Length: 72
Image (tube, rainbow, N blue to C red; front, side, top):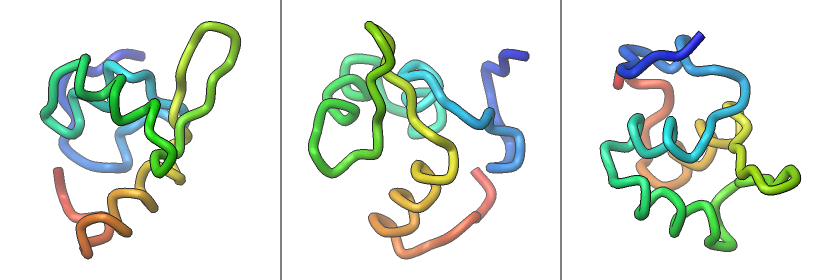
C-alpha cells in the first residue's frame, strides 16, 4: 500500500524507502539520499536498495527535533 501523503506516524510502513523519507520530511529525493548516506541516519542497504526502519526513523526524528510522535 503506497501513500503519497501521510497524516500520522501510525500510517508509515515498517520500512520506508528513500522517496517516502523525502515525502515525510518534505525534502527532495536528492536530499533524502544524502541524508540516508550520512553516518548519523538509520538507513540500511539491502542489495541496491536503501530502506529505513520506521522505529529507528521515529527515534532519529525525536533525537533531532525534541518532539516525539507529533502529528505530521
